[in-house]
Amino acid sequence: MDLYDIHTHDAVTPSADDDGVPWQRLHYILNVYPLGFEYAKDSELCTWFSCGVHPWYSEDAEPQLKFLQEIANDPRIIAIGETGLDRLKGPGLQIQEAVFLKQIELSEKLHKPLIIHCVKAWDELLHIKKTVKPYQPWIIHGYRGKPELTRQLLSHGFFFSVGDKFNPDSVNEIPIDRLFCETDVSDTPLVDVYSKIADCLGIPLEILARHIQENVINIFKLPAINMPSKEAMPVGE
Image (cartoon, rainbow, N blue to C red; front, side):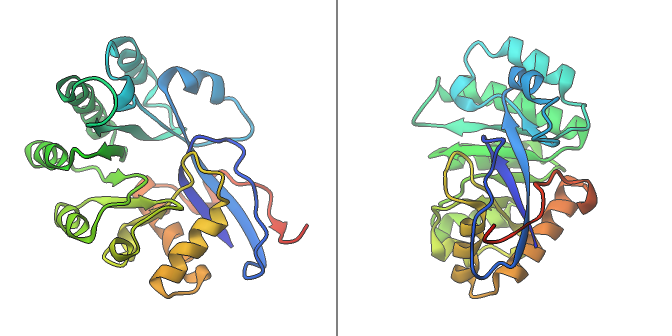
């Protein structure tokens, strides 16, 4: 069984034992800052990346944005971000928005999905999406919002990536073809994230895994055989 982690900051995502999973391969997209890509790109541990300027670090971000524009066409970078808006941390929203808009432009130019970090700035995010009218998928990572917000975001075409902490009522609102899984900075094994979400949805883990795999292939435009993977390992070894 193949499990996909679309947003992690750890290049060594561990395999995990689970009695309900007879066999698993872990695939992941490593999130890096633009300069971080230079350090990570030749690692044998990771083949695919998302790359962007986080809203926390939007101030004086021109050098990083310039470098991002230079490297973002690299085929190993399969998504732009994480980028977005955070009302609780980082410089003022006006500064964050300027950096966000430049990365939206890059996402559209290169036809690569956008990975979004948003904290308490949903009105601003929706306003930007309505104004820009992007063609590329926008994926909100680490999503924990309430059902009312979820329905609103769904009506505007957002996708959602869910980690080990989530709102069960909201997860049940998300169509399975709009759903992804992630570990972000958590130590929770990816298989446990999948198990929690599968239990929440009332479906077998294997069915969830199959849908997530289809979503990854469709949205990131990758054949499954080309995704980075850890060695297949029988559970319990």
